[in-house]
Image 1: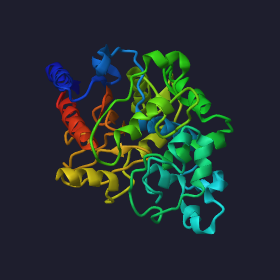
Image 2: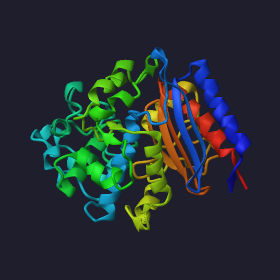
Image 3: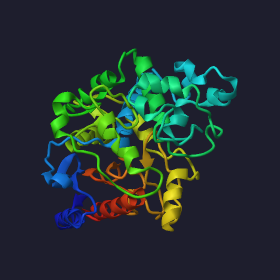
Length: 384
């Protein structure tokens, strides 16, 4: 396999045209095969309003792409026997059950496998049991979740969880490793071993000047612009939000993506078991639809997509319903994304990876259209 350089140039030109047209503000994208970077594009603005150009070491708040890093902690815990997919949340976080018998129903059934596959039955809310004023405090979130009801039988429906599932997983990982801080756990177990020097949960004070502001370009829909732009303030040096609260660079994301491509191998040893990563990249939701993206596709008049959820990741699967990967990326491709702005995927069949962090948060339907186009063009560059 190889990547056609003329086609990659078309990808770069298409992205530049998108930005020049004002579709979004800037992008840092990396396309690689066999671990070798074939295309790296840094173009546009970190902040269009001030004409601040995007630089190759700028730090993004990648929103739900942060979930990928929390997945990594869970993969390590699974590899090391500290957790299993059958571990119930209440076995590690007993207070999750709550003290009100009317809020306890079915909570004792939710296990780690349900959380990873977005089948926990918990509500699909961006507010994890507390208001915005407490969202950056993981201990407050965990306390608040004790009073949140299960709304579906665990395991019966796929409903993407913006916050609750990964808040619980982050706390489960923190407790089984015996750390006082989730952010320090991620630093020690994932970021430091991979040399991800510009990545953290929270935004260190000495890196504020390099941070790309979150600017939202959408009207109506599931979230309001202020619901997302609030993270400019919430993600500070003390924030611990395992679902949305990391800060990172494209090159650091690429380091994480490379670990997944290598199935956990790092410097001749294994940070994560290859069997865990292989299983993570398989579909575990059968024929179930994803309620959230079913809503997005329905509003656009598109074919409804299957959930295609692996262990914490989205898997491409078969079919041609519009999605982030496009129909020409391998069915085994998988990855994580952040609301209207970020995406990475690994195509194990073609040994190709895609890392894309953008400035300017799009409406989710527009975001799917953008990545459908760009991912398809990248996949079209794969030639024998």
